[in-house]
Amino acid sequence: MGSIVDVVVLVAISVLGAALARRLGFVAPLVLLVAGLGLSYVPGFPEAHLKPELVLIGILPPLLYVAALQTSVPAFRRQIRPILLLAVGLVLVTAFAVGTVVHWLLPGVPYAACVALGAIVAPPDAVSATAIARRVGLPRRVVTILEGESLLNDATALVIVRIAAGALAGTAVGFWPIVGQVALKAGGGVLIGLVAAVAAAKLHRKILDPLLDDAVSLLTPFVVVIVAEELKSSSVVAVVVTGLYLGHRIPYLLSPTSRLQMEAVWRLITFLLEGVVFLLVGLQLRSIGEGITTSVGTTVAITAAVIGTIVAVRFIWMYPATYLVRLIPRIRNREERPPPSVPTVIAWAGMRGVVTLAAAQTLPDKGGGDYNKDLFIFVAFAVIVFTLLLQGTTLPWLAVRLGVRQDSSAADALAEAGVQYQASRAALEALERSADGAPAEVVDRLRALTESRSNNAWERLGNQQQETPSAAYGRLRREMILAERHVFKVARNEGRIPEEVLTRAQRELDLEESQLQRSDD
Image (cartoon, rainbow, N blue to C red; front, side):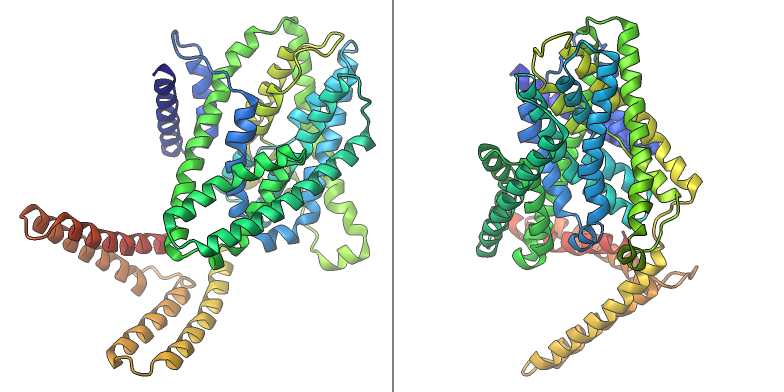
């Protein structure tokens, strides 16, 4: 009973923290991290001990899966070069750079353990990167690169951690053996992900019940990660590939009801998981700090050196990765050269989170020499706190200062209006082909509805101060829905209709009102 109460308390605090963050205009992970740290000093508050298996198998897969489902595959493919340079190249360089610095400061610690620490703190987090990038309003290309990096860099980092941990037991470790292992495990993850995606797609095509569709979707990331772990492949890559494949094909696999319901279910799950995870990170900081046996000076020096290294290496890597590759004629002629402000913002958007939290817990208890697991875990947590609190809070200011702004909404509206016009023409042609025998008033109503949708798209291009026809329609229709809903409730209360009739009518009115709200958004 006590554990259930603890879970309810954590979820309630995460919900309150997220609500407070939205009210204050802050990013929720930052508020929950600080709240967790503060609550850890409250007498009698439950201590947090998060097992790495729970994060790597129970929390990380669904978060990565949802992020992959929502990622545009065409945009991901167009930015695959910078994504791989960050997700593979930068993680490898950061791991060895941090490992070298730490080994220089602590020569008594095995080099493999230092590289493991470097891999732990190397990958930016998918949750915090996506949340902050969208909150800031960065250009779509920058958001795609950050999302793609955070989806794939976990695989590189976790493979390095496992190889380095094995090296502590006597296995040789080096740069090229690690590169080979990363490629091998990533290739296996891609294969497993594609097989799982095809199997899940076939299930979704055959399922007609939205509840079963939701169940299959919820089970998919967990099944994929378990199979990949059993086959010694990258579970992270497998989950991401599965999500990208299914997300690109969802319009053809699921019914409209299933898509709407699944979106709502996943939004709730990710909201709760993200909140609880960052709250737990804050709650564990105090206990980890108390377990360190090294001196305060040594702890501060190592922490500062690691933080400085990961920030410096990311900046040093970004500019050559952005501009040197454009010296290749084929790439130079195809791609536009971004201003220096773009790689600067990407370099500063290196917030760490869930993966660093989980990977730090997987460090072996003993590693020989002066190896101290508690010190390494504290450094990893300090990196999370520093990047979230400093980089996460200053990234909006930096983006505005450098003029890196969100893509123009006018361009999106123009593109939407053009495609909507083509879609409306195709819809009217389909109506004319299938209208034989249908009542004339029905055909006229459908024709008017199609033309109205096309006109609404063009309205968004205007900069009028007065109320547009679509806005007036939405406002008046909401008033009508409110009146209809009241009549049905009164009829139910007076016993003139059963509860089932009210439920059916309420659902139809809710669907229409939610559609109006989505149009406004």
